[in-house]
Length: 390
Ligand SMILES: *Cc1c(COP(=O)(O)O)cnc(C)c1O
Image (cartoon, rainbow, N blue to C red; front, side, top):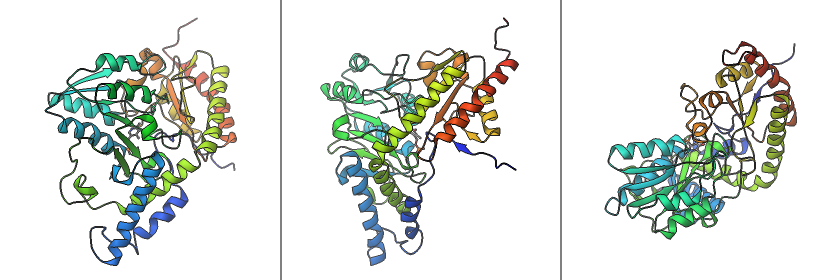
């Protein structure tokens, strides 16, 4: 009997933890279990491992170790950046500029601040999901305390002109935060090059463990504490450190950055074959996101007359794990806020499929998806009430 195929193409949602990373983490669950805040040898070992990881994260993004703060993941890093800067700047102003296509970790944080009386401008994007730096210029007022625009979008893969956006923010003396969760390991991320004052990272998006991340905070950036308690993370983020997770983050970011040029080129070739193959084989289909300024592993295609959820179920039955948009919204019936911001009509937003590649994907995987997808879309369209009768 043929073994059921298993093709994982949802790396924007999460990635498998690399074996080298698991291996590096393991001793910190058992023999090196010490609390970094204690004073004996066992504790100093744990403290040393945390500081070594901090150095690795800093080196990966062109920062100094004192500018890296470990968090419970990308969501916490985004929450801290936005709420922390807003709170510390309350006397100066009450206005935040962000984009309409941010991850919910930024978007819902901004909504929460609106309920507390802050004002937020959600910048529009063009049909490819790009923010025009000119709109940032128009949005900034003398009450603006933060500009936050993601480095690359998790749904459609569009890469933002963050350097230009940061430049506009700095011209007005406003700090710039970027959610770089999807960018690490995909293209070079350097806080100086990008002009980032704050930058969010999440380990599980590049071969590290879940619930571990970091926030980069440029020296002298005014930001409130996120978690009150002990003196960990120089008193800015209390709580006993997730030592194994932090060690895993350090190892994973080092591997992701070292392997990036080769890995990104390989993924981009598979990405382009998937995009071309689907657009050629299936009529009434379009690419979502930017054709060129795009993450090397991201495919996002809209199929008219079908429901994304139905495509997912049929792909799953054939062993392919994919997504319709971001995992956080796939249980809801609302169309993706990213696709609607790009101007897609609801029917097309609902019929969108996201395939995100990772290092373990092969050309065979791409062939397999291209083999099964036209049949799936064809069958769904035959049953579709959305399809015009011709
Ligand atoms: C996954 C993701 C997050 C959230 O990170 P977690 O570590 O899962 O909390 C934030 N922003 C983007 C762009 C993401 O893709």
